[in-house]
Amino acid sequence: MLKMKIRVVSNFVIPGLEDENEIDFDHPTITLREILEEISSRSLNRVKFIRSSTGAVDPMAFDIEINGLPNQGSRETLETVLKGGDTITINLLPLGGG
Image 1 (tube, rainbow, N blue to C red):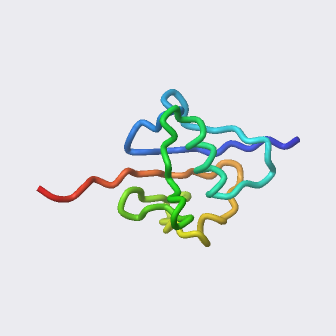
Image 2: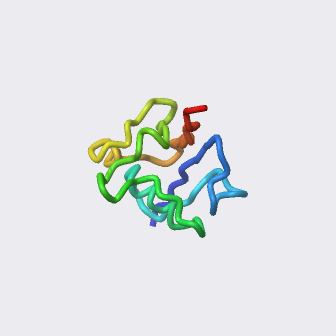
Image 3: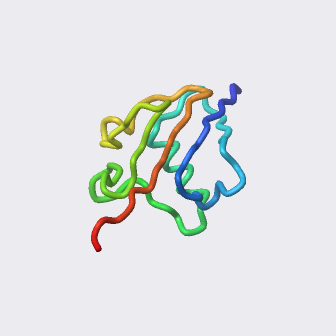
């Protein structure tokens, strides 16, 4: 079976990936949705990137990029197929207010 590595970069420590910045997968292809679900499943507190109510990433909570290009995290763009060597950037957006 062909293994692939996806690099994960973030502006916060992702629970479950504290000492890693690459994830190995035993899939020849994988979607952004599957990556985010895998990262979520590795965290003890189950960081939820995808809202169950919408099936999309909350744009007020997270900013997602693939290889430096913005990805809205909508239901459609979560089906983007990734390949080995791709970099996913997950940034936690600061809360506004005062």
